Image (cartoon, rainbow, N blue to C red):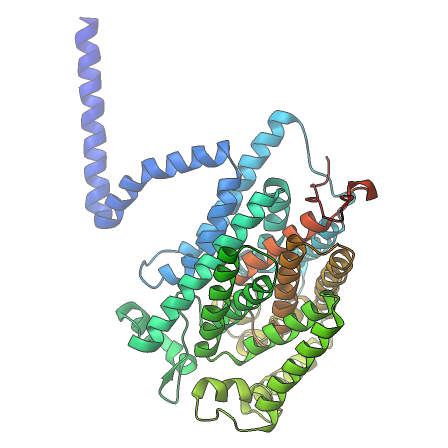
Length: 484
């Protein structure tokens, strides 16, 4: 009898589940079916991350490249996947720490201290009397501070050996090459229906100039794409100059050529400053006077060609790059005029208008305010508008500290392949830091993710615990992560 009741109970349970599934599918249709099919995969992935939290970080890096592009095809907030993956990885790492009773410390880690000071200031912005929307702060602070502190800290915790560093380079360069090839496809054959719909939604005004497409690949926009291509191309060039195996050097050189071409077809003028400033930093770090002179002359030649000649003027991409050096460029004059307007408004607001008060989030949550209505264009102008002169000084101080700290660390390293790779990372960080004045590239994915991981690896691979850890033959050891 008991067995019969159990069978009846199981049958009823199955019936209820089937009815529930039918209702879900009827309501959600195809999306519900996809979600149900993806559920076992999601559960399996979550278990995998909790067993090996570093999987979550690799996922963050990959998703950073494709998330924004996918939103043109799937009407869902896929961009939040980066947040979800970072939080999941953080929870998994916390779970491991709870089991071992070992907790991280900021002691002897000046990079995390600097980031924490900035993150704390951003947290205190909740109380900014000028802020109009808590929701705007929540959305905007992710790119301003949350991604930075979580990514850097988790990389320091989970990727503190050389194999992870090599994988990071492979993933970064690999996806950058894919993005470059996809951009070339757009340039030669045009955009698809979903991308055309995105252009028709108001983006054509900035991405189709004089009948020519500014290529954006599967990135958020052409400005982000151009800067990201310049970033990867610069790093690939510097690594190709190092003492690596022929296979590696060929991969680095291919990355360099593809990505620099991607930069050109993006029509992003500000991206030009990534290789200009980044390669200059590399020439100083190389500690090679002949290379510094030759590189300086080559840079001066390129600058002179763009600034004082009309060579290549028939090429639209070169025209765009040349206009970046014109002090009377109409776009530049408009930006300067906007900055004057902001300067007057912020003169009595040293804490700014609140995080999320300018740009996209400002237009969404407080559209009738001056900050929302005034384009910021530059990453630093955005930081200034939202966090005031106090926030701008703190933010610039943090970035300049990174540049000075890592310059000294790399300068004191002996010559070796790992040093060449670190110089490439440093040059990229320098270039993006400079180019962020022209465009809001630093706080967007994938550039922000790559930048933050680069900062963490620069710390891990240049930090020396004691002088006795130096190899007696002058070869650098892998610099171990700080002890807890």
